[in-house]
Length: 203
Length: 203
Ligand SMILES: [Zn+2]
Ligand SMILES: [Zn+2]
Image 1 (cartoon, chains in turn yellow, purple):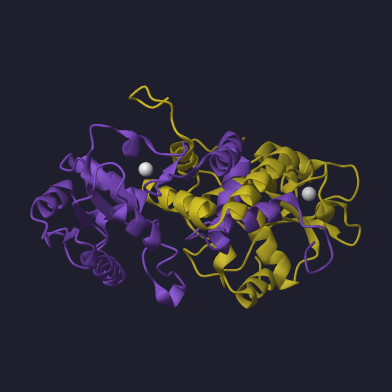
Image 2 (image 1 turned 45 degrees about the vertical axis):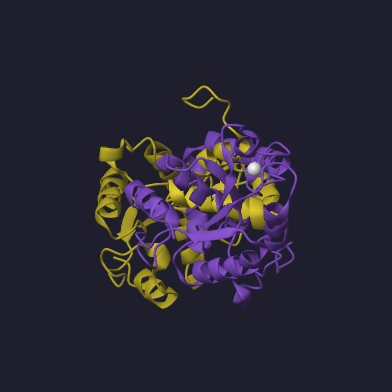
């Protein structure tokens, strides 16, 4: 119901729902709704179906926390990957950027975020306890090196620092991508050559 | 199926579907998908439901062409509106902006677009034949004045000109909002006082 007591109409409800998308304000939501209803109803139906399928099917990998439709993702299950190396990234997009370089054959741990105390995102929210368990796990191949590939901005650096402090006492080598990656940039926007270079010169 | 022959995963399908929203590129779509799946699955379900409801329920008013869930919209059915005046606007958002001024008590015709020959949007697409029929209709209260309130940019001006040329030979008074509205601007972003002023000084 709207504040005036009239039932919210279907168009108004659609505009409201679109406003929940990140970066979409009232005007953009209205334009999106008009566009879909006037020019592309098949796209609206496709989006509705994709949303429902994703919400019901997509979960987090029990090993690396990335999005997957299986209990454990295909990367974690891949026997060709080097389980002695574990690369910690903020998002699946960052993981995808590293994969595209073709320079890394180890495994991943995806934080699905970064530390941001001001936003209430603490160690639990980025899975730090599970990361420590993962590294500490003495079943299977032991992790010898954790490559921290969080973004090179303030929150990413803090996240990297906290991870390094948590892991160093446990006898694992903790490295960081070399600073070939421009400071202040977001990893997923960096060109592949720079990422490959930074990977080979990690410290 | 993806080009590689693997089935497209639910996350990838969601990103693709989000890219159909106007103004949303690959990076934005990915961020939207991650945000919904990581932080706001209820919003994803709400959006899916709103899309399906809107696609199945929202149609065009048989009288004025605006979006409605009834055969004829509530504005067209309102006996308190002055049927001698017909205001032609490009979008429901423009109609809503005029309504918010409280200065207009006539009826509307919503083009649901504007003439744009380069984009293949001609007189049929904006309902010009139906507008002429609507003005020419001798059942009910005759339309005495058509106020053309298309936007004051190039395409809106061309649209206004074509409408005026089509209606003038039929003996109806065709006016245009006064140029108090800044040239080059989009009506829905103009402040209410300016719109009200332009309405009272229509020529
Ligand atoms: Zn995994
Ligand atoms: Zn109507």
